Amino acid sequence: MSLKKGEVNLGTSIMAVAYKDGVIVGADSRTTTGAYIANRVTDKLTKVHDSIYCCRSGSAADTQAIADIVHYYLQMYTVQEDTAPTVRIASSLFQELCYQNKDGLMAGIIVAGWDKVDGPSVYNVPLGGSLHKAPFAIGGSGSTYIYGYCDANYKDNMTRQEAIGFVKNSLALAMARDGSSGGVIRMAVINESGVERLFIPGNELPGKITLTVKDGSCSNPFLV
Image (cartoon, rainbow, N blue to C red; front, side, top):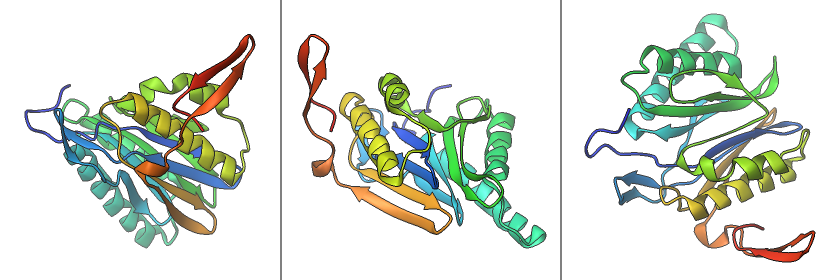
């Protein structure tokens, strides 16, 4: 399914990773309408409950509407059950909405957060409305450039700082290669203590390093 004429597209590089004590969600900030950059500082990280966030890719209108509906249902759940929803419940709501309306929506969503039942959790709801739990998830047009990097550099039980560096470097790589991704990096660190928002401006994105390889050295201009 393609965007309708003039429809705003989040373009996008989005990501979430679980670390030892919580999760980190991150995204670029470029929103496009065709080749035109409609907004260069979009916030693609949307809060749906106190310790649950989603990262949105695809149609801006579709993903905003879905996130608003899920937020409403989670608020109702909290009142009726007198307890906070789990990340699994939130992701199941996203999955149900995306699957039941898969012919009319263009939405790829990553749901991540921390809850008392499962601790840190990351779920991916790609186009079509399937649901996948994983230690990390990437999405959007920029994700196609960084699958190899993420597979090679992810490790279990990362510290907070290691996870932040992993997300920051991965998104910077995607933004450097993907014309529909760019701007700044926004991140949210979610754990038992709450949520901390992080902001990395464009002029402070990871820069150039030299990588040492078996036969000598090679230069990679897109990593820190």
